[in-house]
Length: 297
Image 1 (cartoon, rainbow, N blue to C red):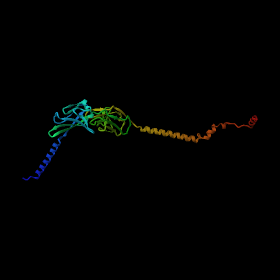
Image 2: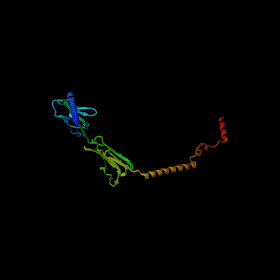
Image 3: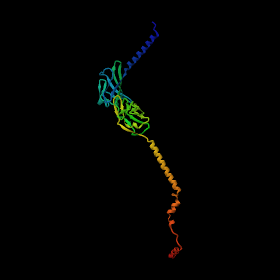
Image 4: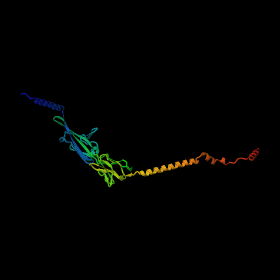
């Protein structure tokens, strides 16, 4: 009976499949691909890393490893390794971590090997542990004194929170988020809740006050201590008046010097003649000269 081309193709595929199965049996090894799990826990709470494999037997060998830049052993030769000895325990194939820290976050893999009819059977399961961390006290940058009309930035940042926190700025205890009208004053500012930057495009005297920032995520929130920012108004009229006064004083001094020079108060010859002792000496007479000469003889 003639077979169709499709039937011949199916027979050929089955033939190659049987060859592949015979190869694995001959080499004594079979493996099942891993399952992927995700476990999310708040820091300092407990977490269970489950290894979803067949029930444990006396001939089964279990290993837990933490993956990353390098592979570190968590459970090996029927014992927990490292700092897991003091804060974790085994429940069948699963690991119960009693006090999870942010350093525990990462990818873990359990490996179960057991003899079977086909040879050594290896099964794997992967668990990703995510640790949620509340924000710490954020670092806030608030200038103490600024000039009215200038562009001013206030910065807030937290490096510990997971997920990354959002930031809200407060002035005198009132949130500035979505509130750009404080009293009768329209303040021109923008707040970036992701970066924590509060920017005043043209700050004014009414923006003076105590500012603090709050960092918040799904785990908790913290805020920095309040800091006062003083906005000083630049007195343009006072500066102009001072410049005019200084210019007037300089002009009067210059005119006085010119007048004194014209009157000769600064002439060197006049001052020398007035103060020279020679101008006050009297001429010596001839009799005095003869008397002096005879005395010498």
